[in-house]
Amino acid sequence: MNELEKKSFYSFLGLYIISSLFFILLVGYWYYIAQKSALENETYYKLIHYADTTSGEIIAAHMQQKPLQQTPLPEGIGIVMINTNGKVVQGNLIDQSMALKPGYYYRHGYHILISDAPRDHLNIRYVVLQTTMPSKEIDALKALVLEVMLLIFLLVVIVAWILSKIFMRPLHQRVTQIEHFINDITHELNTPISALSMATEQALKQEECTPKTLKNISISTRQLYDIYRSLTYLNFSEQKEVDEVIDVGESVEKSIAYYRPLAEVKQIGFETDVESYMYRMPQPQLQLLLGNLIGNAIKYSPRRSTITIHFHDGILHIKDEGIGIAPEKQKEVFEKFRRGTDYSGGFGVGLSIVKSICDKYGIDITLTSALEKGTEFRLCFHEKV
Image (cartoon, rainbow, N blue to C red; front, top):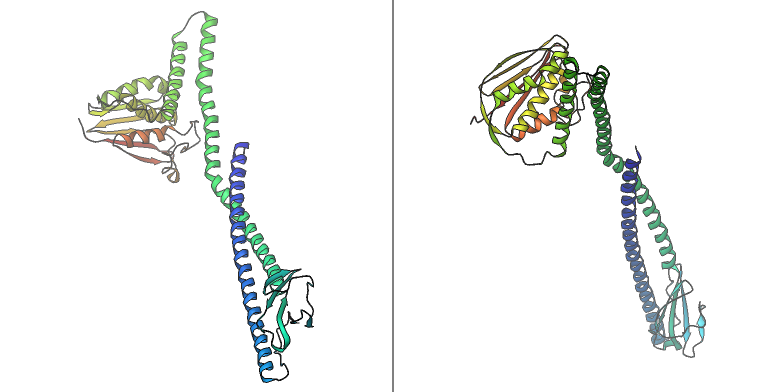
């Protein structure tokens, strides 16, 4: 990945992890508080129950004038009995300095319930229950919640990493395509610019322009103009073009004449049979469409071959004797930055432009190709004007 991709990757990863961590902490805290409250309430009501049970036993023993038969309390709960004089007659208070009045208290890690339910029977004024059970359970709950949150966070990090990779994959592919596109444009521009430079240097040395030099300059200029038209369409494809009624047959003949000098360099001939056909669409769009198809036919045809162009009843056939396109690549040649072959350069936008124009103006386009036998494009212009 380049620096831009790395920055995007780690920005997405960091944002995902931070937002997920915040959500995990929020849910974990909410769960911990809810469970802690439930444990404390459960402990409170347990202590109330045991205090009432013990007080009932005290009252019953007093009323029946029998010795107190105290029901054993669960392990972890201590009981203290305080008489009417405020003296401890059973057990040990955790906090000797605490005020002796009914209520529920938390002291030194202990949950303490003071109950006056005995009502001074057997000279007992308060029953005090003390326990650390909820504190231990809360500590265990806290550790459990932290462990679960840590495991979930680790899982989120793994998922975030995978999602970031998936998120970056199309971006990486697009960046790679753009990098290749720039390299291909550089290569494509180099050929006509070099030819122009050589032709002008030769003309300057000879102090005259020979027909051959002028022809080279003309061909190179047309190649540059074709690249310019394609790049302009890519950058301004949303710009509104004015539809007009044009003669498609005449435009086909003009395009053939325009590209004939380029074909002659490779000794490629044209076999044409074109008739007039009126159609409504912008002239520049049609010229760009035809230019890409005829230019590709010349580019991918061998020397001394023939390009056949027929146009009858609104159906245009452009057939070459070139290298052809492999069957598995024929479906993707109309996609931007995709090429059917690496032969003879190109930057993979010509046929995508052709398909875009055809779709925009209701022209059906089909492709027939075989390796080493050539390629034929068939365009059907509907709704004759």
